[in-house]
Each structure stands twice: as C-alpha cells, then as structure tokens.
Image 1 (cartoon, chains in turn purple, orange):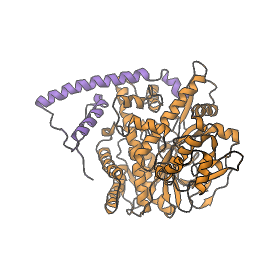
Image 2 (cartoon, one colour):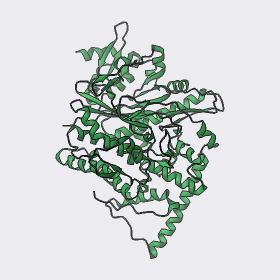
Image 3 (cartoon, helix red, strand yellow):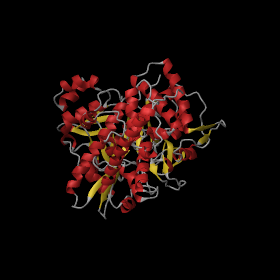
Image 4 (tube, chains in turn cyan, blue):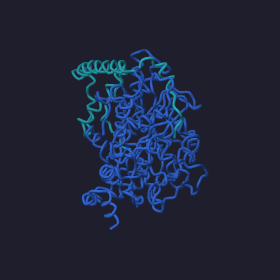
Length: 87
Length: 494
C-alpha cells in the first residue's frame, strides 16, 4: 500500500477536535499530496502558535455548544433509556 | 461476471418518550409512523404474501409462524412512501428501509433522507403528546443495557454464487471492516469484557458465525433468503453485522467497499487464504481495540491485525479492477479505502472528521478533558447516546456537521429531494411513481410487486422481479401515456 502523507500530524491533545477540520481543509487545498510539514521553526512556528490559539478558541466554542445542548440530568436519562431488543 | 450491486439499508431506530413513566414503545412507534403524512399513501397495505423470512440460504425452510397482521393493523404499521421507501413499525422499533439504489453515493442520500423523514414525523408526533413529554429518536443500535436493534444492509447477488463461498470469503471481511464502519460505543455489554470505548455498537452482540436468527444469538452472517426478486436468478444478502452510522463518509465507504467485495466474490477474485480461527471472538477483539493493533489468528497460522486483513482485501480489489471496467465511484472508493487503512495503521485519530467511531471518540475525549470527566461518567454516556439523536439542534453529530467538523459526501439539496423522489435507476422509480400518480388505487405493495384495486374489478398485481427494471428509462413513457391506474394496467397488458 502507498502511504499518503498529506495529513499533517497533530499531537496537541487539547486541540484534538478542531485540528481535524483544519487538517481536512489543508488536505482539500493540497489535493496533490504536497502537505505542508515545514512549519516547525522560525516564522512558521509563530504562525502555527497563532493558528493554535485560534483553533483552541474554536474548540472551546464547540465544547461550549455541546455542553449547552447536552441533555440535563444525564445520569437519570441514560438510566431510563431502555429499549426492547430488535433485530 | 458479477451482477450490478443493487442495495439498500434497513435502519431500526431507538425510541423513547421523555418524562413519560408509562412509555409504551409499540404505541409510540405507531404514533410516529402515522404522523408522517403523504396523502396518496395513507391506506395502502404492505403485501405480506410475498414475504418469507424463514427461508434459509443454506437451502432449507425453518419451521415457525409467519407474521401476517390483519388489514387494520397492517395499514397502521406500514407506510410505503412516494420515494420508494418503506417506513414501518418493526416489533418495538420504527424502521426505515430505503429504496433500492445502484451505488454507494445514492445510498447515502437515501439513508439520510430517511433520517429526515423520521425526524419530521417525530416533530409531528410531539404535537399530540401531553405537555412536558417529548418523543426522542436515536439512530444507534443499543441501549447499553444489553438490548440491541439492527441496522441492516442488503445487496443483490447472483444466485449461482454458492452461499458457502459467500460465507467463507465474507467472514474475515465482516469481522474486520468495523475499523472504518463502526459507529463507536462507550463501554461494553452483553457479558463482553469491560472496556472504556469500542469501535462498534453491535460487536458485543454477535454470538455465532452463521444462522437465520436476527434477534437472539445473532450471527455474523445471516442466512435469510428473501431475494425480493426472481428467486432463480438472485439472492439478496441480508447483512446484520453493521452499525447505524451517522457520518456520510462512513456510510459511503461501508456500502461501497462491501458491494465491491461481494462483486469480487461472485467473480472468484478472493484468492488469498484469510480465514480466521475464531471469528466470533475476533469481532469483539477488533471492536475493543481502539488502537487497531490487536493481531487475529488465521487458520493458516498467520497473525494479522484487522487493518492488515482489510489491506489484503484491498490488494485483491486493486488487482481485480485492472482486468475490468470500473465506475468512477469504484475508483474513488479504492483510493479512499487505501487512504483510510493507511491512516488507521498510523494513527486512527487522524480520521476524526470522517469515520464515526473516531469522530465520536475525539468528541468524547475533548469533552472529558475540558470537564475533567472519566469514561464512567453519566455525561460521557450521554454524549455517546446523543451523538445519534435525530433532533437537528440537539443531535451531536448534526452539531458537528453544522460547524464543519465532519466530512460531507452529499448535499442537503440532494437529501431533501430524496425525501420525495425515488432513485431513477431501479424499480423504486416505478413503485414511487405509482404511489404518487395512482395512490388512491394502489391496494398493496411489496419490494417486488404492486397491486391495484380499480373499481369493482379483481385486484391486479404487477410483479417487479427485476430490481433494475422499472427505472425512469423504462417507465417514463408508460406513466405519460397512463393518466389513470386503469390505463396503466391496460397499457402494461398490451
């Protein structure tokens, strides 16, 4: 199997989620597999740090929205969710 | 030469009514299904004469009683829709069986249209429920208390391919495809080993390799032999081993790759020995291993991870397509299948926008980290359940979709259209067209027939034993020249 390397690795755990959307966008833009893996130092590093902050902000917003819509009284809710067996 | 893989899915949804202590699933299902209004199809029967769920693909008939409801109950439980789908009450669950399609992308469109139809009827049903209560629907497969309900796929196959061949070549594929088709689940159940998180909603429930059952002692390969088509020519593989997926990309890959592998089986293109020593144990081991590193033992003595075994199928597929014409979709599937396996081998979390179990795991882990929760916390279990919630504003999958965190395969416009319109390249087009045009005179429907009750004349049944006939190309002129059902029947005879 060929190895495609156009998905930049993301090791920052707290950015776990939004980073994915980001890497997919990059993948779409990249298209030809020429992923950008060069930004680990200097200017690129600063850019990534800035990008990282933006992503963290996005990520916080997402978790906030999920927190808002998540069913209240989770414990009771999941306890009461009982189904009859189906197929 | 493999036959075209006409396919569909049959999704049983979870149902509950919040704040209702006397919640009764069956009456709630009946209310739900009857809350969906398509004027033309209100009083049409589902034609149980054509059903035979006790026929076994290994060549025998199992004894047992066939379910046939009376007319009133039949109408109350069954709706055949103008998009060619069947929307009905199956035991204690609402079920949506999408119309027959010929490719994985159309499958995604029609499965997603089903979600919208069920959600629309849920909203309607809630109008008549007592204040303070609310009906909720989940596209998942388990209540996490040991009760499971199914999400089935069906694929048209050539009757000449022996069932034994199908079982042999498909078993390792089904045990391992969950690495990209699993919907993800927090914890385990049904006496399976404890775990924090697993790939599949259903894996804990498979207890045997091959059988006719679907509700107890579930088999990895189901032998139900109901072709819903010409019995001499076709079988219809009834797949019960899959999960109810939310991600469009996951649905597309699941059905597309499975259809391709089935075509390869028909063409004798599975030529490697990948038989597993213990598939029933294997399916749980693969599901419980979120790192995707666990090795399974093969009969040959080799050891392979699930991803490596899928890689063997992929390589056989890549060789298979060199000697025949492939569709653009099949080409795309091969590229994506390879990319997904590569990422799974490297780090499954790279698929956090594409594969359901990874999307859910990333979401849960981010939430846990921010809130300082662990896998046993009720909120984490709630996240798992609510990922599958059909409410657009509360369902967590839809929240992620709206915010651009998951990969789409189809458009909202295509899904909306499929709520009302059948696929154009299968007999679903004829079925849907008849319901739209002659609904008042349609008496009964099944996948392979439609019958008309015109005035005082005896009921006339039109058979549709060829799933690819009855397409727009075949019947558009017939519809145009038949303004009434009587004319349609007359024109069909001539």
